[in-house]
Amino acid sequence: MIQKADRLNEVKEYYFSKKLREVAALKNEGRPIINIAIGSPDLAPPLNVIEAINNAMQIPNVHQYQSYQGIPELREGIGKFYKDYYQVDLNPNNEILPLMGSKEGIMHISMAFLNKGDQVLIPNPGYPTYASVTKLVQAEPILYNLKEATNWLPNLEEIENQDLSKVKMMWINYPHMPTGAEATKEHFKKLIDFAKKYNILIVNDNPYSFILNDSPTSLLAVEGAKEVAVELNSLSKSFNMAGWRVGMVVGNSKILKTILQVKSNMDSGMFLGIQKGAVEALNLTKDWFEKQNKIYKKRQALVWKIFDALDCSYNKNIGGLFVWAKLPKGESAEQFTDTLLYEKDVFITPGTVFGSNGEGYIRASLCVSEEVFKEVLERVTTVKSKL
Image 1 (cartoon, rainbow, N blue to C red):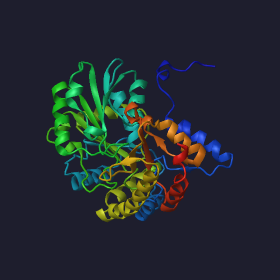
Image 2 (cartoon, rainbow, N blue to C red):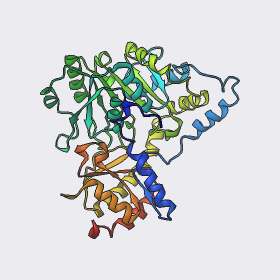
Image 3 (cartoon, rainbow, N blue to C red):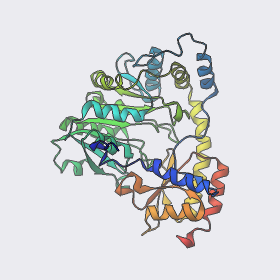
């Protein structure tokens, strides 16, 4: 067998890729597994978005390659969206780069700026892909602590106590996944000042702005942010279009031009029909988000009841597509979730997936119906004596 590349030696298979095979095997055995672990929206995209992609099938060039930078209509739609909801001015010609989902942007940005031996500040807990991609490009992940005591926000004084001479990039993610914590404009200002002081590129991964959140915030709303920061965003969560793979990176034109050097060698443009659908989504009014959040609010209340039944604690003032909960003292996250899986046929995420600071926590997704959550609640009300 051909030997795999050395760059894979430090990179594990994505947790959910591996765990879902285990779940599938249990289902094949006839087990009635309920999955409340994955943040893949089960609700449908808006009808006019579906109509837009259907109508696009009649466009003569719909099946041809498209621009690496997306159609002007899409970039203009993203620009208007950022202006309306975040009060951020973006030039559609050079400060907006559509992506096939924001996850690919993590790779593109890393490949564009990181050399072997460069260091990257990675949140703990945080999205595992930040660290995995950093290792794939042979840079070094440097974990920084996020803790409940500081509302899951970076402690910049603690970070500055270490040698930052090799740090080239810092990943942040607010509203935060997995905890749901939010950063204010003042928090962002401190991060921008920090980045300027140490000449670090900050990337804010921002796909959860509109889920159970009345005050969407962008890092780029801070004065001077474009000098040292870019922001990833996505239509996956806000518009129930996860499988469509529509995202964007926005910010400084020179930084985006560098990212395009990578992207233009990795794909041949986004399907025109999907771009047309994305334009329709971006033109929706606040009514769309209000309707979605009414559904999520009811689901969230049921998850709170499930966590109450498991003697977990959580913050009711935090939104987002997930509920992050603290386990009873002394409980192991992975042991706890495996017990739920094998004894109650409920698949939930252990906090350790997101880093060592996730030990003692679990995360549930809001991406299943109320009926399913009620079934989970019924199953877990008898589990406590066995955990």
